[in-house]
Each structure stands twice: as structure tokens, then as C-alpha cells.
Image (cartoon, rainbow, N blue to C red; front, side, top):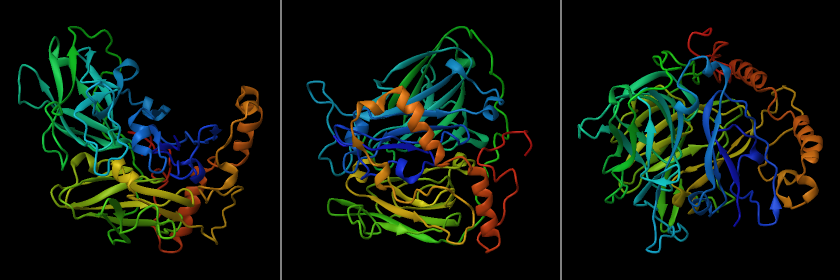
Length: 468
């Protein structure tokens, strides 16, 4: 089956971002070039092939891709075996034990068996100390609203500190007793098991999450079995506050563009357009480096839509409808936002650092495959004046497309001696800081942005007390 790789949360150049039609077929290969240059964050990779994303991701083409950096390491958060990635999923089985396929589904695949890291309703042995838990929702269609419960105190929700989101560390930790996480979102927390030595702590899921269908077992996620003694108390201190200078986009409230997520027959649409409508699917052309407010609207009471905007990190500035902006959302930059039933959400982003054509879409993969996906063109600044040696505008530029398999080009000698030097010579990601500073300068003289302070303008953010 065709495949296309998207490194979700990376500011990859357009030809390496997993454009849905940029597929690799059986007997072909494609070389992807990723930056690995952003501040520490929980990325993930997954398939993005047009009309087949749900099948490919559901059957396993998805996983964690975690970036670290010295600044985050200096905060002494739980690390090593106490830093635990947890990939949530919701599966459906046939009577013979095989997985039911999402192929042919046009509404949603809710799933009645909750998986964590590929295991149904697992348990995990922990020590009575602090753990960093990195949650990623890889489900095709199910959102979660989770809480922790001591098996001896049923009904009492236990507190934890949320400290990371899609784009890495939040500005500050937020104490909560529940976590809402929709498809493709990442949220990180520090949970302290010290008070629960010798007990079982169950991670549960609320009923009636958005419009999702509930089943007998969808109210439980996994169990933590707490041992009697902590073997190592390294990096077990308080979570620092503040955590990070997010480099928020300059404040702006005027809506630049509105996008309505809806349905027409069996097709899911954005502003009544489907991704198959190639002549009309570019719905926005923000100028490179411009700050814009996008309003996302869902007038349906029957569906929710987790909206992912490629390339950028955005701030959720308002939500109208059944929920406000959540406290932990206020302290984070995101690349996915849950557009719940009958909700309007405004998000603020700077369309940078690169120009090129990128996608935005619903991350309910059934909706995405049945065409709730569109594109935006971060438009070239003709008078930018900043020298760049290579442009990556078209995600379907021929030189970067998949090619027929060639054994000679899969050797280590070829990769190290030819392929990597070729990519390096493009300077695709080398000058991110300089590029962003040049964009800020460009727009500061045109009334487009308020120039940020030097600390906030750095893509590699400064954490805690380290200078900002």
C-alpha cells in the first residue's frame, strides 16, 4: 500500500513534510531530510498517504520521535527509566482475533479495546517516586478525558502536574486532576507515586467524551502497580516554575481567516472544499513570517475535529461553546487543537520559518481520508532580501519524489559519502535563528508584527532561570 511519512511537530521543509500525494509505492524509496533542530519536544511519526492514512497508522505506521536538548536536561525532570512514553490507541477486533480494518469506514472508528504501547489495558510496575509520563493519542477517532484513581479510593481523582505539550515544555506546570487529549495531541505530566507505595493506581477514561461512542471497556486505560521502595531518587525534585519562555506570537485578536469544518454526504469538508478538489484546496496564502489569527468552526453536535496545522506552533487564544480554553492549554504552544462539538476556536501563529505549501486537516483519520484536508501556501516574500541557496516551495518537486529501488543507494558508503553531503549543501535548516530574525525585522518595518525580545525570538528556547 502507498505510504507517505509525516514527522508530526517538525518544521520540515515542504518536500519532506509528508504531503498526502507524495507517496512511496511498493518497489520505491524516498529519502527524507528532517531538521532535528527544534527545542526538546515529543514529536511522532505517522503515515500520511492520501486516502490510506487511517489504515496505515492503525496497523502500526506510527511511533514516538523524541527530541532532547541540554536546556531541558538542566531542569532535572525525571529521566531515563522514569521518563515513560505512553501511546494511546483504541482498536476493534473481529471474532477471530484479527484487527478490524478502518478501510471503508466513512464516519469514525471508535474502537472498544484501549491499547497503550500496543497492549490492551496493560499494567506497568513503578516505584514510589516521580515519573514523567509522555502521552500521545494515536487513535484513529477516539479522544480521551483521563484521570487517575487509587483502587482503594474509587471516585477520588488524584492530582498531577502537566508540564509539556505538543511543542515541548509549557511556560509553567499546571496542576490538574484530569487530562483531555484528542487524536495526535501530546501532553506530558509529572505524576508522583510516592504516596501510593504498595497500591494500584488505575488510569481511567471518562464516559461521554465529545460525541465518541462508549463501550464496556472504554472507561479504563491502564494500571500502575506501585512498588514498596524507590530504588533511585535522582531527578525527583519539584517541577520548576517557570519552565520555558515560549516565544509567543505577538498579540493579535482580529480574525484573518475562518475555516468551517463540516460534512457533505459521505465527504468531510473545510469551507465546503475537499482535498481532492486540487484547483481549490489551497485555502490560505499567508505571507512568510506574517502573524495571523485563524478561526476554526464546528457547527455539528455529532462530531468533534482535532485540527492539525502543519509547520507552525500556535497559541489557543479563545474557545466558544461547551468549554473554555483549558488552563494547561493557556500555558502551551500547540500544533493540534480539539475543535469540539459546536465550538469555535481561535488560534494565533506566525507562518514561518519557511515558505512553501503545507497541509491542515482534521486528525480523525477517517475524516482526513474522506477528505477533510486542505492546504495553505506560505507565500514567498519577493523583497525579503535574505539570501537562501535552496527553495523548497512545492511538496511535489520532482527531484525529491520517491524513486525506484536501487541497492547501490542504500549502502552506508553512499549515504555518508553522497546523500548526506548533498542534503547538507542545501542549507535547508542551518540558519533558522537568522532566518526568523530577518523575518521579524522585515515585518517590524511594515507594521506586520511587534518585534519580540531577543530571548523570545530564539527557536531554541531559553528555559527557567537561564537568562529570560
